[in-house]
Image (tube, rainbow, N blue to C red; front, top):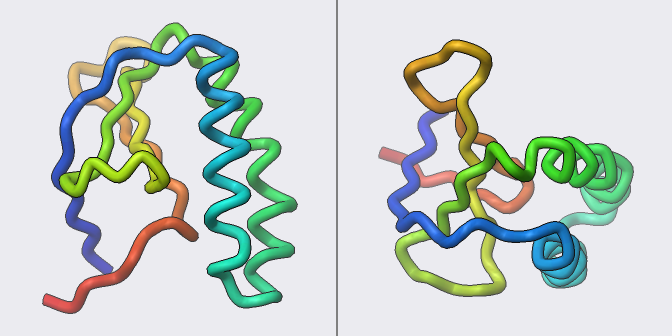
Length: 99
């Protein structure tokens, strides 16, 4: 599976901004998911949010090409000693495109 994302880096979020974004993202995305996926998403998003908050000072934020503020952000950080970033995506917020 290939995921292509084009985007622009955004200014860093503080803790309050990230929590506000996550609440809005969850509220917007949940009704768009199938019932079975809603439960899995809700179960896992809390842990993902805690992970992001723990890494907040190290994160870079990217928004998709459309620049929609209700879409998913892409998060990037550098693991210890890495020269290339690790990118984090919420899989339920991605749309598969066949190439």
